[in-house]
Length: 493
Ligand code: GLU
Ligand code: ZN
Image (cartoon, rainbow, N blue to C red; front, side):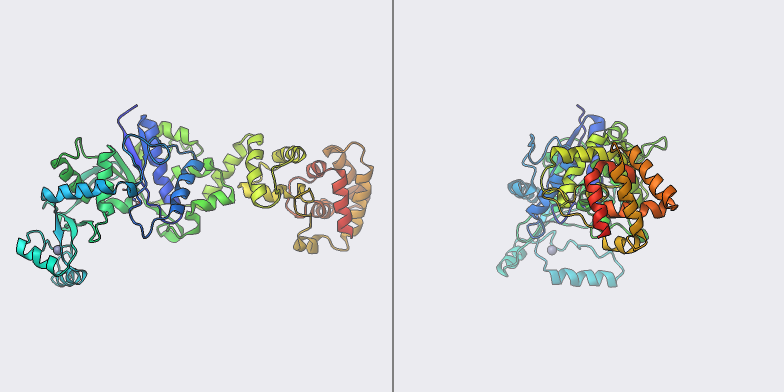
């Protein structure tokens, strides 16, 4: 065990997205690399936006991806609870201590007053932050505001200094004092804000390294200030955490990948049948590199090598094609039995199977997998390629040929081909791939004098329903003679 303590602390709003998961992954890898602790914290203090659905999705996503956490929901830990909604007294207590020690103060300004003064500052070419009006209110002023029924927010009193830290990714970063005005930590309703809860929990949970997205860069100086205040009142003990800001992820047209982009939804990958291994592998490349030109690696291999110093500060580009190609590589690398097992839930969710496969169906799937493993990029594609083997089984949909394919391939010209194929297949002795191939070649290529495409195309569409299928002769063998012949018969009719 090392002292390294990192955290992943999403807010449960909306669907988990890839930017979020990339952050989780880098923290996880850093914890595993150092033998440190990976904390999973839920920042659910915004009752308007947070949802239980999103909370459950987050947990399910990390579990699906195999990123185990050492402290957090469901596993507990010495610094719990790990849901901020259950830590409200802690934040109220700290806010009170900060007020008492003068690190924070009550601000009674109304939205209109603040806006007016910001306007004026802009007009005078000054940076339009909070102007500190309520820093030194007299008791009289305060009771006046209270009598008016104003409800104060709580603001941090920012020291008049510039803020510099050595960012683990970006090197020295500085914010000038004027860009970090006194900021709100508790709303007028008493609700604590992210600006308070996040650094407070980092302190209480003894976080040593904060790795998070670049969009949070500007909150770091505020958190440093809050950290110093917590140190002054004896809540914080050790050194400030180190901060590292992971690069932006860019999508199409070199725009920041947005939560609303379809390729940013983690659920999409799961539904389409990406493997968790493939997705993680790709996400690892968004800002980090394994080295030695290696782009195919597991998360355990990543953890072995992971070093924040090798995170690239330049924006990373999200490329769905590359993500899919890496996934396909993982599909090919799987043990065929493993792949067969992973296809089963998708065969069910796609409605090809309505229950767990029978022994016969499992044998069929196992026989088919080696012939399709090289050709599919996702599990869903694997379902499309193998579904024809199960249509017509008890509980599964009836077999039918895609009407477009039928119109193109099963024309009147195809009749004699199908008829000949039936005759030949009827006469095959032992039903093996080799015997089937031999019989069809003799009958259709030698006998009818057809080119392979015209000979086998109609047979393929008739028995698999599609023009793109696993290899034909193998497919026929796996399908069995009876079913193959009845599908050819159906095509004739
Ligand atoms: N709850 C914050 C978010 O979702 C956490 C940011 C951080 O890592 O500090 O953006
Ligand atoms: Zn004020």
